Image (cartoon, rainbow, N blue to C red):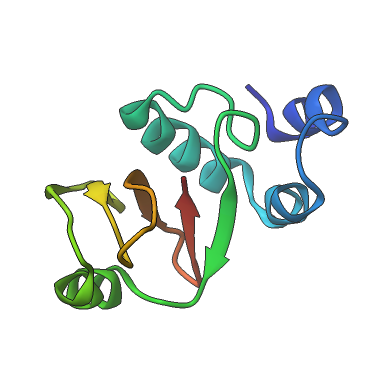
Length: 110
């Protein structure tokens, strides 16, 4: 789907934070996010998941994972790392998320 059309059709339902990130993306970057999101069944980027922009690299995430309370596994795929069963701090809910490399910055889908 074309990014412009996706935003027009869904902007009423996407958080302002996620929407502002979507508006920064090129069509190619959006396509990368959409493909990565399918790994965790995020069919509608920004609707099925939250979008977070970060300057941390994929390597930064892999290194910081050593300090998390728990995570079951991670899988590196083209332009992304998928983390499964992550509990960053005691008492936090476990979650799966994807960190996607978009050259000048990374985006987390969770």
